[in-house]
Structure formats: structure tokens, C-alpha cells
Amino acid sequence: MRPSTWNASFPLANGPRQSPIDITTGSCASDEVLRGKPLQFTLPTKASTIINTGAGWKVNVIPEGSVLQGGPLSDKYQLIQYHCHWGRDCASGSEHTVDGNCYPAEIHLVHWNCDKYKSFEEAADKEDGLCVLGIFFKVGAENAELGKLVELLPQILYKGDTTNVGQDVDPTAFIPANRSYWTYPGSLTTPPCLESVTWIVFKEPVEISEQQVEAFRQLFSYGKADPQPNDEFQGRIVTNFRPPLSVGGRVIELSRLEKNVG
Image (cartoon, rainbow, N blue to C red; front, side, top):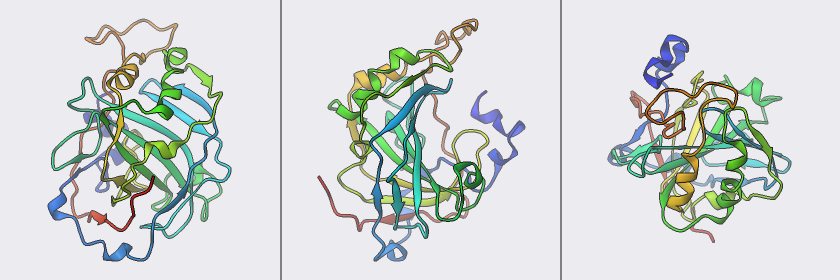
């Protein structure tokens, strides 16, 4: 199902708060509203499983000790999973774009509001229910932590395949040392496109190797027992990003207050 047809089954896909968007840097608001509220996070290193969802790979984490707070957030949030979007080549793949420019891939760290709600499921459709950290990947040096996941991909080639993540993976390796970010109210970028996400998109990309991106494209969108789709990519998940949508009347804020780390 192409993103352009989602609204037929998921009416919110035509809503006023949809994601991703093109971040036009010249029109971003002042960061005064974020002043004095540094973004703070502790990300869990233990993951339970990695799964081929048919649209890409997703890592389910063991969330104990996880917390995301500060910045644009009034409550505490907890990581539940992370996943990635990419394109058929390194000229495209990121869901968010910056002044019309794409990156080869974009990883999303999905958090839910654990202060106000009892579960991810309860939070998922609430206006302040979710927060997603978005990080751009650019081609460069191999990312060692991502490599731990890439080496598991041959075990989840087909839709529905799942395998245990047998070692610690530190998601902070997916976050840039420069913690400047854009933030805006948006939605999930996959159906049902719930308009419940506070987006925090880091300004600086993180390097991964071209071989790592290519490994993503080897996954299949169909189950092992299903017939192979008769398409130009022979059923491989070669592209899985939603194109940018209208910003409308939303305000995108830029925070430059975060110091470099590392």
C-alpha cells in the first residue's frame, strides 16, 4: 500500500498534524521557549527482539531505567522500540528532509508518556502520548552499535521473522554529539498515522557505512511461505519512507542549547 493511498483506510493520514515534513530552516522559530529546559535522556541498552515487520526492521527494547524528559516535554517518556527508514539508494531514504534535502536513512526512537498513561497502547492516540527522536544517517564510517543489529538481519529476512538480540546495543550511538534539534507536533509516519507525536529531530546526522544501508535493502516484505511479489524489486524492502507532508500552521522550533558531548 503506497502512502498516497493510506487515507482511504486511515482517515487521519489526511489530518493537519501529519509527519514527516520538510524542515525549512529559514522559517524556524526562536528557541526561547526551550531555554532553561535541556533535553535529558537515558536509553536502555538491553533489547529483547528484532523483527521484520514487512516494512522494515524493528527492535523491541527492555525499557527499565529508560527516561526522556526536558526540552519541549512537560512529562517523562520511556523508550519502547526503534526502527529505521531508508531508500533505494543513498540519494533518498530519510522521512524528514531539511530545506528539501534528503539523507540515506533515518532512525526513529519511539517513546511513550509514562507519567500520564499506563501503557504505550493507552498513550498512542493521545495528543501528548508519544515522543519520537529522529536521527539522520549519512554514509561514512561503519557504526559499531548498528553493526550488532545488521549482523542479525540474515536471521529475519522474511516478514514476521523474529530473533533475540543476544547482546547489549547502546542507542545513544545513534544520536549525534551535537544535540541541537528541531521540534514540532506531528504524527506517526506509518498507519494509522496517529497525531500524537512530539517530534525531536536532531540537526546533525550520524555516520553509518554504505554496506550497512545496503544490508537493510536485503530484507523481504513478504512471509517465507508467501508467493514472491512480482515487482521490480522482487519483494525486497528497498524503500520504506513516507514523503514529506504539509507543515500547515505548525511552528517548528530549533534548540541550539544542547552542548556537544562525546
